[in-house]
Length: 228
Ligand SMILES: C[S@@+](CC[C@H](N)C(=O)[O-])C[C@H]1O[C@@H](n2cnc3c(N)ncnc32)[C@H](O)[C@@H]1O
Image (cartoon, rainbow, N blue to C red; front, side):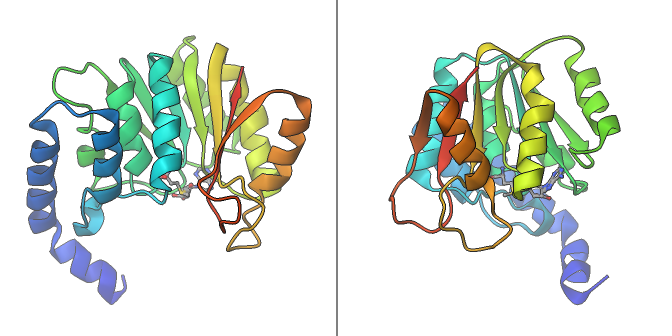
């Protein structure tokens, strides 16, 4: 364990206390979609209990509005990270959000599972593992138990091979007229391994798509949406 991890570990009880206090604040009022997005971006930093998202506000807001129009029951997300987009999905799905990541979300699991607003019957299910592993896909199928997903958010492995595999493996779970969104679709990217744009270019050639891009010249970000 390095020094940073040790310090975070020692501060777990304090950070947990302040993060749950912040969660109660978030839950204290009904939140509009705009407010929910702002909470996802500015929930706060509490060591392991930090919730945040690396998204552009207007892009993720446009996506959240489109997802809300679906009146989703079930949302599947590849890429939990710091739980920011999970916070948004958990305010929109009526039944379940399944959020997947390579990294095990302990000890913040209990905070992330508590994200749905008061009165919601939405359950948050956090699955740990590699989305490309066939056994992991089986676990997702088990969570769905024959039900279809209204919205799939692909924001995990950003290599061309990885994002293509996620698209091919998980789109079968999306119901007809449901939606699939990809993050980081713009061509200019800060890292060579961000290759979503290669897949996105191919998808764009095959049919009607929607794009939420704040600035055509931006480096990184950008959300692409297809309807199933
Ligand atoms: C960009 S972050 C997700 C951000 C999050 N959706 C948000 O905006 O709040 C990408 C996450 O995907 C996870 N990831 C990368 N490759 C993965 C894989 N093959 N299977 C599952 N998760 C993966 C990483 O561990 C990382 O936490």
